Structures are given as structure tokens and as C-alpha cells.
Image (cartoon, rainbow, N blue to C red; front, top):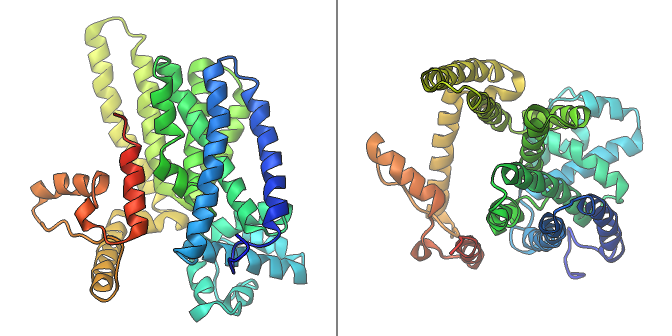
Amino acid sequence: MLLALRFFSINDLVLGPFCLLILFAFIRNRAEKQKDPQIRKIYYRGFYFKIICVLAYTFVSEFVFKGGDTNLYYQGIKDLRTALNEDFNYLGTIIKTFKLTLDNPLTPYFYYDNYADDFTYNYMQSPSNFFVPRLGLIPSYLFFNNYLCMNFVFDFFALGGAIRLFKFFHYYYPKYTNQLALAAVFLPSVGFWSAGLLKDPVCFGGVGYILYAALNIFVKKTKFRTSILWILICGFLIYFIKVYILLVLILAILIWLLAETNQFIEDKTLRNIFSFLTLASSLIIGYFLLNYFTSQESAKNYKLETIMEKAEYQRKAIESLSSTASLGSNFSINTSNPVALVPNSLVATFFRPFIWEVNSPVTSSSLIMRYNSIPG
């Protein structure tokens, strides 16, 4: 641990356990309030599991990835701290700044931070990218800018959302406790990628909090104030980080609530009519939501034509890179037929890379973790 250059430091030996002690106190407080002993165990085991995920992610980001997105977010936090150390009045500017521009007073701190090719500034011109270091300032000041502790805090938020996601489905399927716990809390790949200073733990945790809050409000009829607060906070976070997740989540919640209402209709004909109207109204509302969200500044990148352009650009970039660099895994769909494209894309999403397409130890280990997480 002490041999690492960027992320690990001697402070980890003190601040790491101190941070874990504080987070464990929160987990213990919540776990002991659970009446079901099985759910109580999931709280504790989920916490231990996520500690392993954070240590693994921090190690891999240091020695294998050697930075990546995490490094840029961490550098962004350091740049914001430098600005605040020089003039604490910059705090108002940080809160109000949507993204970095050349005329922003914060820009020099990112532009001249000695990061290669001024990449920090370029990266922070994206609103969603700039949001992460702003959010990371909170644990940064709490734990003296310790990278490991910031990972623990981000991961703890994801764990809270994962547990609530589990409890959401457990409310409807109480007989499948272990299966639901595996799917929501203990999947190795999900645990790993929600364990660092990234967008993913915020979005993943936010989805869990919103769903469980909606369950409390509309179905269980309890904890109204707390649930509304969680919906507002997490909705705000997801909107500025990955708005398309919020869009899909709103549609899913709408369909779910309409289906809940449909159960109270006794007449079969009326129930079928209501089901059809539910589907139709969901599609109409989804269309207007899509147009509304993508008209906002933070969501213009998620217009359908923009997504297609970016996807094609990334495909060409990866194809070009694969010809000059040794990638851990690289494969092509090899079809332009729209009929064959759908099943091939689904196979690529859920099952590829296949073992014979992997030429990197890191990718191989990730593949093994994914296959081991499949029940049976």
C-alpha cells in the first residue's frame, strides 16, 4: 500500500480506519432497526463487501488504470481546493458554476494545474464531469483530501441505494431474500464500479433511494417528509450527472404506479382498458419528458441525434485504437442489418467478451467475476 505514488499514502493507515468507523456507525444504526434478522445481516455483509470493492478499485485505479476518469475527478477536487485556499469567496462561484468556460474565474486553477495537455480543464467543460469534483469537495474537507476515504464515502452512498433497491423488491417478493440481495447488493461487477470517485456510485445509489422513497409515499404511506427529501436530493444529483437515467426512472415509476392502481379495478374489461391507457399515456408522457429534458442545457448531449453521432465517433475511435494499441478486449458486432443488430447487440451487452476474445489479465478477472455472480 505504501509503495503507490498518487492515490495511496501513509495517511491511509489512520484516515482509512477512522472513515470506516464513522460509516460503520451509520450502518450499525440502520441495521439494528431492522426487525428481520436476514435483512440485518445484509446490511453488515453489504458493508464488508463494499470495503473489499473499494480497496480493489483503489488498487486497480492506481496500479492498472493509472488514473483514468478517477484521476481527473481527484485532480478537479484538488484544483477547487487550491482556489478556495486562495480565496474562500470562490465557494459561491463553485456552487453557481455549471461548467468551466474560458471566462470563469476558476478556469486558471484547472488550466495550469500541470496535468498533461491541460486535460483537466477540457474534461471539466462537461457539466456532468464538473459536478463530480464539486460533490467530492464535501468528503475531501471531511477527510483531509484523502482519496481512499473519498472512495469510501461515494461507495457508502451507493451501498445505501443498493440496500434500498433490495428492500424495494423485497417488499413485493419476500420469499426471495437471498436472490434479491445478490442482484441488488452483491454483484461483483456492480460493487466494483460503484466503489470509487465516479459518477456511477452517485447514480446507482440515487436510483435506489428514489425507488424506495416512492414506495414509502405511494404504497406504504409512510415517512412522507423524509422520502420527499430523498427524491428531491437524488433527483437533483442524477439530473446533473446522467439525466437519461432520471428520464427512464420517471417512466418506470409512472408505469409501476399505474399498474398498482390497476390492481384495484375488479372488472376485467375495465382493467384491460386501463392497462391500454396506461401504456399509451406512458408513451405520450415519455415523449414529452424526452423533449423537455433534452431541451435543457445539461441534457442537450442526450438528444437522439447527438447520441448517435457520439456512438459512431466512439466506435471509430476504439476501432482506430485497437489497430495501434493492445486492448484488454475488442470486438465488432459485424452487421449493419437492423434485424440482426438487435440480438447481436444484446449478446454483446450481456455476454461478451467471450473468453477467447480476452487478452488482458484484468479483463479476464472481470469476466470470471461476472460469470461467478450468475446463480446456479
